Image (cartoon, rainbow, N blue to C red; front, side, top):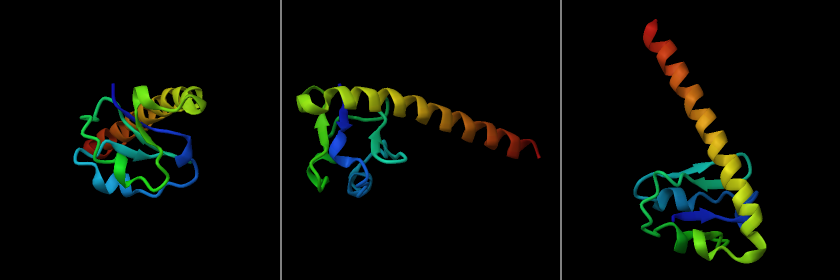
Length: 97
């Protein structure tokens, strides 16, 4: 289990959570911030600084946002993976020069 950022963050992207995160596991997506679950250490430091109260422990996401949150997590995880692969490829290309 980990913390997640729910629907209230869409189009807000305040970034207070990024500044507070001790392990830098919060990233900026196109319309919402997201927490990379493999990097989150479940410290909860981000939760109280969110101005729209969008950060919840995964099991505590309010029911009206659970489906959207599941879709966002799946989508953002794939997107983050693709972005990371592109960065790695670019770095490898740069190192060959």
